[in-house]
Image (tube, rainbow, N blue to C red; front, side):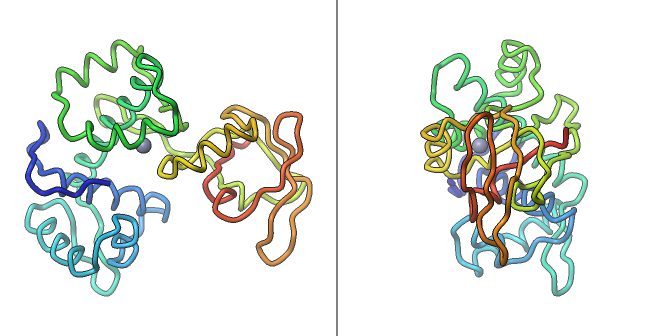
Length: 230
Ligand SMILES: [Zn+2]
């Protein structure tokens, strides 16, 4: 992820500010809207805790985030809007690259991470129209609307699904290209029906039928794969 400080997009914010609010939004959303701490963010953005602390002060000054004592930050309404705007760019770009330029789904994320900061509002609107105002990106993530509304993510991580339960595989974390290539190699696709047959104790792997095949899935992959209730 790029955190270069100098470019300014049509949102009026620097690339670094946009990357931070986007990361805060993602971590907070995964945490039921809770505050995001310095260490979580440092890990996500691969920067030092000192850099994060400095950026927290800046985001607070800009009115994009509020400091929560001992916990970290939450986004203000303005911060949330900025995050959703950048996510809209990112996810529209990913879909455009995949559908119209033939870029494989394991490579669109990195390209979109760079382009999301520089496209104009006009180009954003044209891409959305060309794609027919889509609701989801190639990894199954919801695309915020032009009004920056986003559908609630009613999915569960495969890791949280008990034996005997299942649903449709509808979303995969997009940050690890190797994971996407692994799914390709295993023939696992978004939209496949998933059923957990058995689960090893102590957080061990699960035996899962996906489509017609049986797979053993655990660890980071079970956390990254998200399933929609039937
Ligand atoms: Zn992405």
